[in-house]
Amino acid sequence: MSLSRTLAVTRKTLRSLRHDRRTAAFLVLMPLFMIALFGYTFGGDLKDIKVCVVNLDQGLNGTSAANAVVAGMRGSPTLDIIAYYGPGAANVSQVDATIAKVQKGEAWATVIFARNFTADAAQAISALQHGLQSNSVQVRIEVDSSNPNIADAVLGTVTGVVQTVMVQNYHLIPPIQVSEHRVYGQGAQFIDFFAPGVMGLAAMMVTFMLSIISFVHERSTFTLDRVLTSPITEGEFVGGYALAFGLVGLVQSSVILVTAVLLFNIPIVGSPFLVLLVIFLLAVGMQGLGFLLSSLAKSEFQAIQFLPIILFPSILLAGVFWPLESVPDVLRPISNFIPLTYAVDANRSIMIRGWGIDNVWVQLLILALFAFAMLLLSTWALKRRK
Image 1 (cartoon, helix red, strand yellow):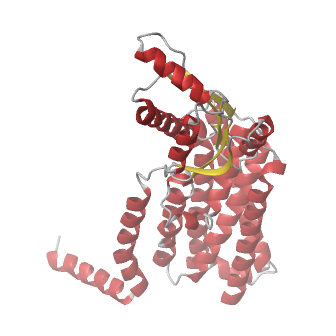
Image 2: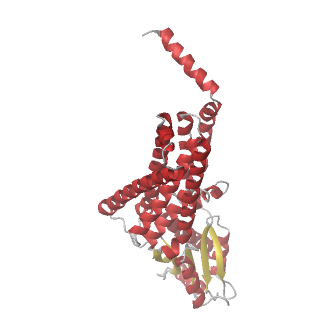
Image 3: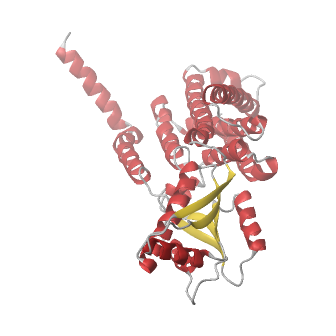
């Protein structure tokens, strides 16, 4: 082995990188992009979880412990009270209305304080002061447990605020019982929340990577040039690829779906065919995006550089591994522009909440528009290249 020849190859490789400014910038900026994205997204606290509150508490001697608890909830960064009905305005109809918000996905939970909340707290504290056994102070929570992390955060925050208020007002903590009723996700575990996200992520990654690699191969072997000289149009070429990779995504998702049910007992409350439709639309759109970005690259190496630029934000900001409520405020708007966000949300709603097409039509429409736009732009890029 000759050291001089080895060094000659090293110099030649470095010179080629120096002349390719896009690649040189990629090698320097991509690590910065990755560490910044990971640093901002990992370990984020859950914030601004949308909840409703119905306060039926009549108070005692002009004071209301429930009012103090609500004030503490408002001061918590974890919760965002989007609807509040206080004494005088709260009744059973408001309880039903706020539960309906949870059922529609407009809120994650509704917290209900009974009419005798303060009286029960005072009685429990008095019993404790006299060394007697006391009843528990009741708090009712109707919660959407399709995301166990969010449900646990709501329950933990409300319980913590109640304990803080009791210490501040009575200097003792009586037994507190949170009466939890799960609107969705009865018995749901983290894997039930995790599986729908993994399905979308797997279909997205494979179709996007395969489309870029396939298109680069078509160009490097001049197969693309020969195909485009035939009667096949650019639209037919792109459409054929889209159908092929859409079917690949369906096969992948079917395998994941069957495996999840058989091995991990993942419940599918809604229609599995609707889940597959979501995956198909996502796969078609990602195939079109892969074609579009590949056509903008001047070399195979430049085409591959698009992979981390697209995949890393999708993995970290689409809600696959942790709720969007834990994404920092500065990055959260980016999630709205990531197609995987809508696929993951739709699949979780179908599989865990049991929603039908009338509930997830917005996500389906966005994915369909994304797929249509990517196919049109891919066809335009092919015609422009020709």
